[in-house]
Image (cartoon, rainbow, N blue to C red; front, side):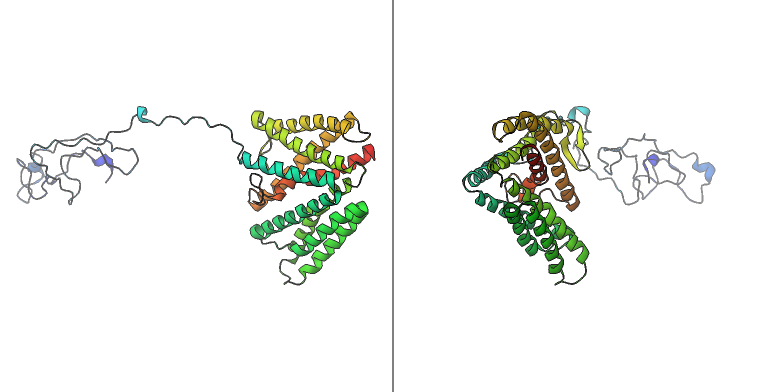
Length: 374
């Protein structure tokens, strides 16, 4: 029965509240009385409709009912004499609405204390190895490459079921970095080709299902992580190699810092919302300005025969390549459905989350150094 029947006049023959006898003063129903006599019986009082509490909700608190029961098994409960009827629950009013929450401050989304601590620790290791013994820094690159390959291949297997062989990738990646440091670009290319061949052969020891996607992912991983990192080792071979590597690292960090600082404070226009919703055009502009200023200073002060205008071009190139590298890994992580590649570095994620800007920037900086100062 819907609410529209509440309070409607009863039809002929409707029985009273007791549902067991006729209403007092009404003609008894039965064959002795026809419709004409039934019209002279006293009608039931009409009770206006009162909507139930809660609108469309299935809640009848505070609803008015007609003088009689609506269903045969619905009998009114008698209350003791002198008892005051309880008032129905009060309906909410606009004044009862909850106050609007206070606006939240912008958050970096990570543990900044842990992130700064890890960054300082990594910086100390890099500086100590870079300016003391160059070969030790080559070992630092190898360790970063192997850990990065482990993170990348693990996420590929977990999220996509792709089994890129880690053993030939790790051995080949280490060989690439060392070959680039010892033999230059030629040695790096030879090591890359041999690593790709090793991936193809190693995967043959398993069933053929998924062979193509596994070896394709393996060759991609070999190029993306160790081969690009080889250009850092190649920078180190110059007479001022330590200063070149330090300039490369500082410019990349400054670019990321400028993008974060300006984007967090002034960012309104999304740079690539489908890839990385947090990046803004204002942040990109901050990366360019910060990197160009730092590049002009570093090329003039730290690099032999470097000039400030070369530093401006170098800073611009670093800002663009670092941003593209960050977006590239964001595409990979978005496709895998993950936020970070790992959890090895508190406040940062994994090693690959720190290499994302450095890897594609390394060949760009190496090439510009060769073009500018040889």
